[in-house]
Length: 264
Figure 1 (cartoon, rainbow, N blue to C red):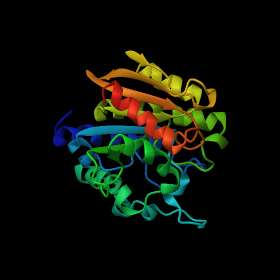
Figure 2 (cartoon, rainbow, N blue to C red):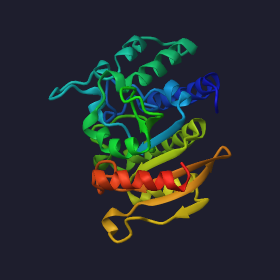
Figure 3 (tube, rainbow, N blue to C red):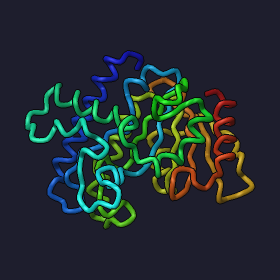
Figure 4 (cartoon, rainbow, N blue to C red):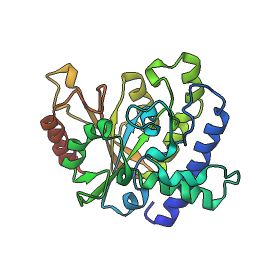
């Protein structure tokens, strides 16, 4: 995908699926309300225009995306003010999805939840990439979530097996379709073993590279290449309660150097 117009068409299709998933689970008490499905975090227009495209991967959106600091109630406008215009609109036409995608595109320019996303920054910056526009780097990153585009309360670890199964019925398939549309140069995946296996099944190894942290099992990072729509993508898989939090900032920069060395 190289043109912005084709990118918009593809992402609009995925956006429609995300909203259908939200509608199907709207009555579940553990789905954050009010909220919107978050197909991705970041500026997709800038992403497609950038020289280096990076996708980061988590589980599902935090309820903090719709909550002011120390507030008890949820509010769509906390981090997605442009999405407030979607409330009460029953017709999901091209204009609806244009406004929806624009609300996602503005995320890192408005009020991002940096307490979580900042864990990626040393690794992204080492790749000459960033989520936002302030640093003027060559690359642009989008964040995506493997299991679901929906924010939940409790968060993923506190959900029951039934609740997880409802999200997993369509979430990973939507994520894979989104990644195919995004065609990233690099994917940074920081998930538990069972979720890393799902990513590997969807985007299997073409070639594996040495683990530069092999001396420490607690710092294990798997680096491999895969093919996405005929394009080579380098995938780094790490662990941690926060993204790659098993690595120091210096080690994250070391990993970015390794990714650059293998061909990024």
